[in-house]
Length: 207
Image 1 (cartoon, rainbow, N blue to C red):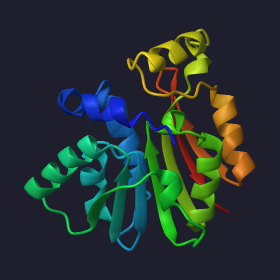
Image 2 (image 1 turned 45 degrees about the vertical axis):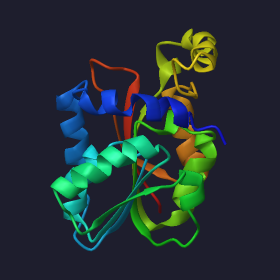
Image 3 (image 1 turned 180 degrees about the horizontal axis):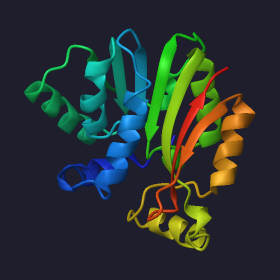
């Protein structure tokens, strides 16, 4: 499977040094997640990158598994964890398709800025649904590039071939929502920042 692993390993150190592009929006999304997490929860975050979000949210729950497919990103995450220990938090190098199962034992799944980078986002969303308990949450923030940059679909393959971009799936917010509802989710909350119409934050629940 092509996860653009080489791209992410190559840029990991540079990525880790970059500040969050929109700190206000990021904190707003985190607050939306925090208010729904409880101490007994078992949580999975996929596409955790260098672990910044995991380190902020893991202390709020009982068990927090954070996975990514980039060894370089996870090396940085592990270093952060060593500097700020959190017994609930565990990092592992695992593709989301390999981790998710149908045990219905997760209380929440978090996928921040990652669905558009997966081989098959529609299938991944279905796996997320199957892995959640009834009443479980799926928190996602996704770049819906086709929303206002439909022309990018013609550039992305070239950028990927040259190693300048990761593999990207380009779709609209409506298409993303259909992936979620077709999988069985109910969309509880949707938020798009006024200054960034591409990034779509959604709180979805499993009935």
